[in-house]
Length: 530
Image 1 (spheres, rainbow, N blue to C red):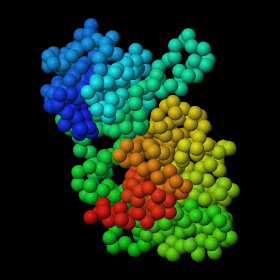
Image 2 (cartoon, one colour):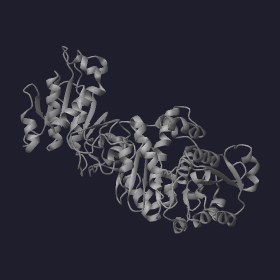
Image 3 (cartoon, one colour):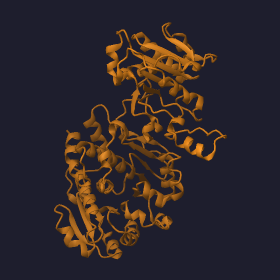
């Protein structure tokens, strides 16, 4: 608790260094700390100790008739005399602070935050400003200890309180759409040891997230190398956004754990992948996917196009190979070639062609990425698709395609957490499912799952562009092509591809087009293999 509270105080000063200049001034910074009845409140008392010691004016609001036990009682007893202590009834009394620390309820919260607690934030924030303070100090920053109160750290959602029974329908609608009745926006969340699922499943846990090492083994120093060494056991949860320490070495170990590239290998030993293309005028998505597969490591990539689209495709490719694919019988015949390791179906394929080609591709039992049209074409009866799937498949739906394949699960998508729903989808399909979005979740049928959040400092909003998902499908295909066909790691390839997808987008920056992504990969890998 001592380390946790000290870490929160230090995080406040790191994020708002302007307060350092004011600590010894005539108007020092002011913090109001809302302390709950448990250990989260104890952390808050320690924060108060440290800020007070630096010259801050600190006010603690707590339940005065509640008796703490253990470490929290010790922290309360050690509050300096300069720290003002009041009951919650005094929330509206006094001047507006610079910082509000939410130390009411943290990890393990299973009930919605009561309206009486929610009202505390509004009452403190609505206090009149101190006359002598500068204008920029009039809006308090909200800092959450572990998580915002009322936040479910297992699911990444706020537990919405039940509305009062006395409301009529109009008032109920207004009540239900008022976010302030459910939670207060948090500027900074400080958690301890490692992030919890909710931190990475939703940005609602705080605009910024800091992880404080409190001395537990295997904590905040986790990196990509550690991820590579972590067994992919059933029901395990893996986080794919922490790449710390010696980043190039960590990345190399991670990359080598996913791929199986022999330095003396020729192109077909590095792996041959096939990307199926749609008809005339529909081949752009497949070409982007194929280029991504080649860029990320496949030794050879062939675009399989209908005869009508062959001239158009041939005019726009160089390193990529091209073969006409007239029907599913021809595709089955290609499966006799042992050099063919991975297939990608869906980008720009068209529903009719996808319905014909997907069963033939899955018959070959190669590593297979199904995206876009290869998923949505089975919307009328998803079980038809599921009956053909095997353990070396991965489905890569965005939310719309997820709704098509798993309509009952999708109905819960915004009430339940993406992690649980993706796991249930993978179990039902009998294949790996990758649910795309700002928080991408990847799950195997055995419950082993990975979460990759492109949130906060890892946000890449320019990835929301047409074709970005097609490129991701190609990247996964290319990584799968490099793997030993007897020791495939579908989950590992998806994890690495998703991480590199975001890194490439962040490296390029605003103005990104999907077709730019494959050509960002060489520079990215050069930097990471330096």
